[in-house]
Amino acid sequence: MMRRPGGFCRPATGPRVASEADDFALDLSAPFDQCRETIVGDWVDLNQHMNVAYYMVVFDRATEAFLRQLGAGRDYTRSGEGTVFALEAVVKYERELRLHDTVRITTRLVARTGKLLHLLHTMYHAASEERASTMELLLLHVDPVRRRGTPWPAAIAGRVESVFAAHRALASADDAHHKIRVRPAT
View 1 (cartoon, rainbow, N blue to C red):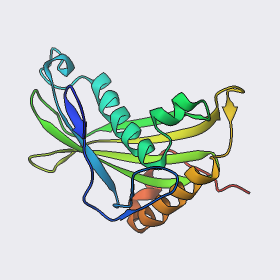
View 2 (cartoon, rainbow, N blue to C red; view 1 turned 90 degrees about the horizontal axis):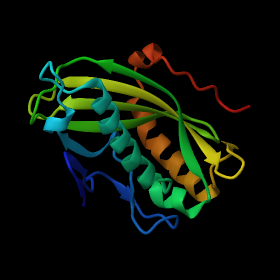
View 3 (tube, rainbow, N blue to C red; view 1 turned 180 degrees about the horizontal axis):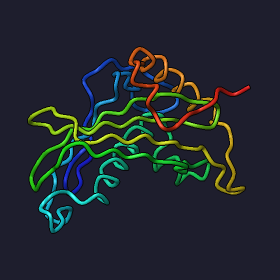
């Protein structure tokens, strides 16, 4: 279990599939649900609620946990084989979060191409299960030497397809309201 100030990402209890790409099983929970965070004092502003900047921190931690599952986390970046850049983020704030509140963050892979991932993170107040915030995120796989978008390596692409197949069942009419659009590769 990975611990850090304010929260943790834990192994999920959902369906898992072993993969040769990594030494851990791929979490096929739909949605991906491994992150919990507790609002700490440094994250609270003069209004006595979580400052907007720390929503980004929490969503970034959820992104990292999701990318780790794909084999594209920090170890992958450190290897020099590739990295992931954020191209666009759309955040919606729906419920105030206060000091010591605990939140649960789920992640859904909405769309993908050979280079792009469109994620939808949803942050819930853990005690009430009320939705507190959402973030749409567009990520690009990048060659770290050329600093240009490049296709996912085969092992990661396979994991992306497995997760996308599991998450496709979560598609809903609300998807029409997403701000980020990913065109299928031609």
